[in-house]
Length: 109
Image (cartoon, rainbow, N blue to C red; front, top):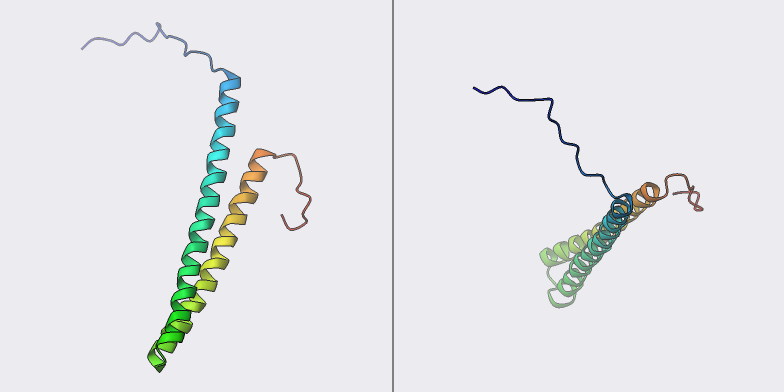
């Protein structure tokens, strides 16, 4: 076995700080857009549950269908609330990571 020469170390290339900042800003922008897309997916799912429940109420008058209709309507509200909660939680987290020294103007943020 050959011995590894530890004295011949090469220095890594210097990091361009402007590129790093731009890359960080772009990463935050991508995360913001992904957060908005996720909110829209939650809203789309909540609307699908809501319209399913309303359709079941309108076209199927049986007790079993009423149970599933009200369950779907309730599930739509839970889905919408969960989506908005997650959206604002991630949005606040991104705001705090982007501007760590600034205090938000809203007292609940």
